[in-house]
Structures are given as C-alpha cells and as structure tokens.
Length: 94
Image 1: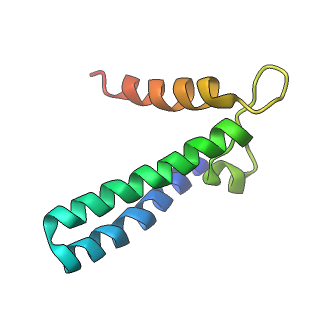
Image 2: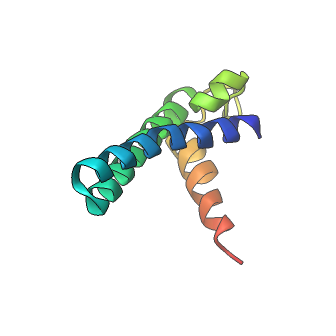
Image 3: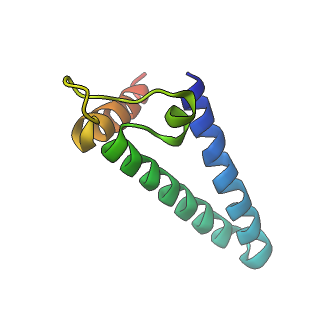
C-alpha cells in the first residue's frame, strides 16, 4: 500500500507543476495538454520499469517487486497488462 501511495504522490508531483506552467503560459487548454502529457510520460516510464525490473519507483523505495513464478521480473503481460491495466478497469465496475 505504501508503494501505491508513493506512486500516486509522485504522479501528482509531476502533473501539478506541468498544469500550473501550462495555465500561466497558455491557459486552460495548454494546462490540460501538459498535465495529460506529463502523466502519460510518467506512467509510461513506470510501466517500462515494471516490465523490465518488476518495480515502479514506489515499489523500489519500499523494497518490493513483482516477480514471475521462477523469480524473474514479471514482464509486460503479467506486470503491466494484468496487474495494472486489468486491475484498474476492474475498479471501474460498480
């Protein structure tokens, strides 16, 4: 749970400054675009870390990782697709 909270806090640290800079420079549309772009880059990096190392930054700081059945990193399908994307979609079901 601590790793998920750390990842969530880091995404806010990335998105909020980008949105503020966008709002100051170009208004609401640019703020939305920069916030979405920075969030996409952040989570793209996190998913790359999960696929290659089995860890997000939060998991790394907490000393945990996602592994396959033989201790190898989880890979893209098990780590990102099943654990991140499918689980997120399941939270949308009422």
